[in-house]
Amino acid sequence: MKRTNYAGDTNEQQVGQEVVLKGWVAKRRNLGGLIFIDLWDREGIVQLVFNEKENPEAFEIANAVRNQYVLEVQGKVQLRAEKEINPDMKTGKVEVAVDKVKVLAKSETTPFDITDGVDASEDLRMKYRYLDLRRPEMMRNLKLRSKVASIVHNYYDNEGFMDVETPDLTRSTPEGARDYIVPSRVYPGHFYALPQSPQLFKQLLMVSGMDRYFQIVKCFRDEDLRADRQPEFTQLDLEMSFVDEEDIYSMLEEMIAHVFKTTLGKEIPLPMPRITWDEAMDKYGSDKPDLRFDMAFTDVTDL
Image 1 (cartoon, rainbow, N blue to C red):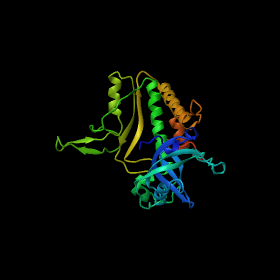
Image 2 (cartoon, one colour):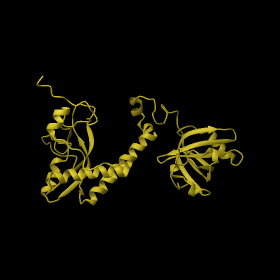
Image 3 (cartoon, rainbow, N blue to C red):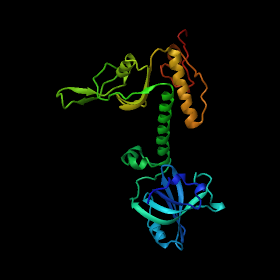
Image 4 (tube, one colour):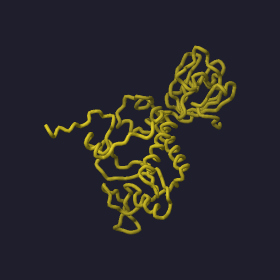
C-alpha cells in the first residue's frame, strides 16, 4: 500500500476519504470491543480505531500490537464524537476507522518511554539514540534546525551570495587550536588536516572575484571539551568584498531577525544593541558576554 499522507497531517478535509498511513505505535488502549491506537510519525499523531464487530481480522492484529510496533494501515477518516475531540492535538478532531492493518516491524519493550521530558540518563539515551530521536521534542529540534538552514540559504541567495562548498581534507594552517589529522594512503608519512574554519578558502574566493560567499559548514578543532566547545561544530560562514563594518553588521542582524520572525514569529528590534570590546571587558570580563547576566563588574580600584 502506498502512503497517502503523514499521520500527523490527517485533517477534517479528508473526512470520508480512504487513507493509507505508516508509522509507529505511540499508545494503545483496549476498551473491549474497541481498540484505540495512537499512530505516530514525524508530523505528529492520529488516532486509529479498530472495531471488533465491523472488522474482526484487523481487531485481532491490533490486539497483539504493542508500543513502537511499525504499522501500515488503511481506513476511512471520520470525525470524532464531540466529547472525544482533543484540542491539544493537531489531528484532535478526526480519527481513522481501520479496515486493513499490517505489522511491518515488531518492537521489544523500549529502555525508556518515547515521550518528552523522559526520565532517562544521557548515557542511556545516547546508547539508544534512534529511540531518543523519536521523542517529540527531539523531532521538533531537528525540524527547527532544518527550517533555519533553509531560511538562511534562501536569505543569502536573495542577497546575491553564492553557496560554495570548501574541502574538508586540506593542509594545516596556523590557527587557534590543534588540528585533527587524517593520514594519506597515497603519500605515506603525510597527513591532511581537517579545517578549523574555511578561512583560507574564503580569502581565495574573495581574491578570485567571487565577491559574496557563504556556506553552512562543518569545522573541527582538537580542543579540550567545555560547556561551549566540542570537537566538531557547524557554523554559518560568509565573506563579502567592498564593504565596511556597518554592511557586515546590518547583513547579519537582518538575517537573524528574519530567521526569528519566520521560524518563531518573534520580532527582533533593529539595530541590535552594540557595545565596544573595552566596555565588554570592563563590565563582564569577557569578549563574548551573556547580556542576561546583570551582575556586571564594578571598578573599585580607587578604594
